[in-house]
Length: 356
Image 1 (tube, rainbow, N blue to C red):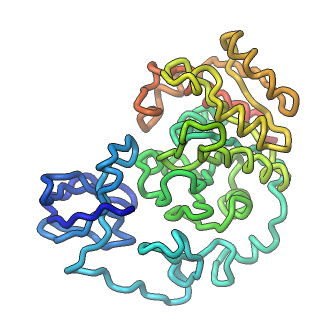
Image 2: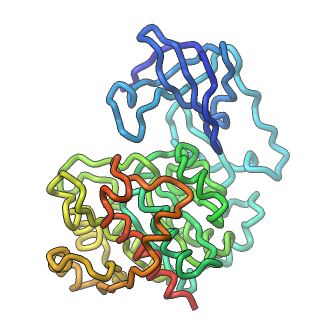
Image 3: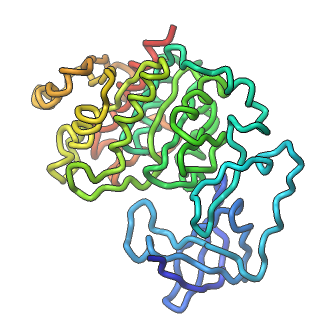
């Protein structure tokens, strides 16, 4: 259920692409809040705001903001539909919620990319790296660019985590290194909007002209601690989509020596389930050279369907440390969970070796 509060903007803090951070006073005291100007307008000091404080009350690590639902005294103007902009579309996302958004789908009739998308039937062998967590994105990208600095890399964001791509400061920091972002399913706010992972992948290849694509959910992975109750199950479905469309699936394994939870220590049960039980088509599963033999042994159940590939790691440490955005997963930095980030970078490097 929604936990509502009313408040007043005391200060406008950081801004990044698609989002603005605020200090807001409420009857419960001061809170940190986030607004998406494309949805609610641009808050200013002194504005009255309506807030959803559910994530803040729960203390969620990635979602610990109060979220601005409306500026009731200063509503934004309706978008101008001139038939040539995103506002000409009828692709509805976050459907039938109070903040459902309507944008232009990449393959809609009004899209400038309609003809390209109508003709697109194959990924043409494009390597596509799938990852469980959004935190793997910069590490995978670092691995790709360490081997192929000129490669065009696109990001296809699924809706298992945050729906607005604007929430991610990582995406904002990587914008100059990515060919673009495609938001799929219920996710929105990318450079292109797509209704499914399949159309998102085709758009990455044929509209953004990507050499390599990375598929992962936005920030805010959902997990219940049960064998099937986690949003990363969609990884296996993404592998099936990539293979069906004639791409080359590369699975970034979730490996960890820093996670205190037994289900994620070593090889995460997320990887074992998504790749071992949901993915019905084969993928390459890269592992960094020198990996602990016990971790390699734990991966053997996946070898019945997939190909375990050992990847050299020379230069990957430097690439990870040169990341333009901070590397962090579940609050752990690079050196606190080095294996996690190295495995993601190895997946990126392997994808780069598959380029023709």
